[in-house]
Length: 158
Length: 162
Image (cartoon, rainbow over all chains, first blue to last red; front, top):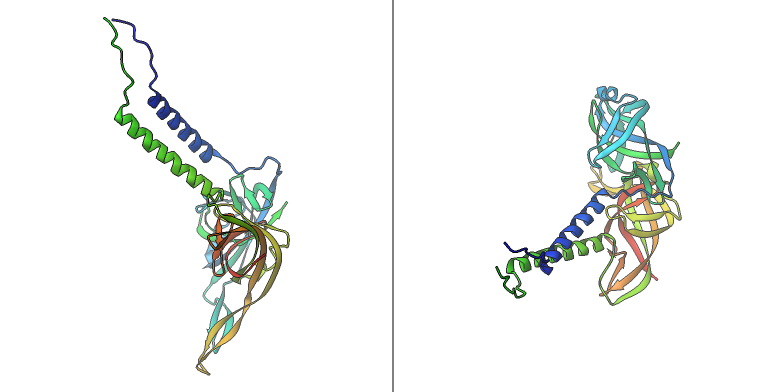
C-alpha cells in the first residue's frame, strides 16, 4: 500500500476553526464573572422585608440559615440577627381616601438581615462577583425552612 | 500503486456546513453587539438626552436611595443610561372612588411616594428617533434601571433633547 500524504481540505479547516471559535466564545461568555479586580471584596449587611405572611413563618428564619435566590440562581448569604415581626399593613379605599390598617388575623410583615460578600461598584452591589443587587429588588428566596419573596430594602457595607 | 492526481473538488456537504456555521457566527456576533449596546445604524447625530423617570407607589424608604451623580445602567443588559442630575419625590396619589359623592377624587397614600429621577446621557438621533446606548427613549417608555443603591422600573415622564 502506498503512503498517503496528509492533505488538509481548506473547507474542513474552516469548519474546524469555526467550531473551535464557537466553543471558545461560549466558554468565555459562560464562565465570565463580572468581578472587577480593582474593587475590594467587602461584607455587606443586607436588610430585607417580607410582606403578609403567617405569624408562624417568622420562626422559619433563623440566624445562620443560608439564603438561596431562585430567581438569581445563586446563594445570597446567611441570616444574621433576629427577625422583627409586625402586624401586616393593609391599605384600602373608602370614601375617596386610602386608609391604612393592620392585620387582625395574625398575618405579619417581617424585617431581617443577612450578610454576604461582594463588591460595591458604581452600578450596585456585585454579590459574590456574579449578580448585581440593590434596594428595590424582589427575589424569590429559598431558606431551609421556607420559600418566600423578599424585598431588599437596604445594603450597608460592614 | 500510482496515486491519481486529484483535482480540487468542493464537497457540497462541506459548503452547506460552512454556510450554516457562518450564519450562526453572524447571528451570534449581532446578538453580542446588541448586548453591548452597539448600534450598527449609520446616519446618527450625537446629542444630549435629559429624561426623567417616574417611579410611582414606592415604599417611602426608597425616596432617598438615589443621589445626584449616581451612574445608572439598564438592569438587564447593564447598558449605561447616564448620570443622575436631580432626584425629587412627592406623596403618591391616585384616583379613588368616593361612594358618598359618587365621584372619583384624588387620594394621597399614607406611606408610598412617587420618585422622579432625572438623568442626563449622551444619545443620538437616528431615523428621527432618539436613543441612549441603543435604547429608544421617549415619553412613556418603561425602563428597568440599576443604580448604586436602587433598582426599579419606571416610566419616562419628561424628555429634553439638547
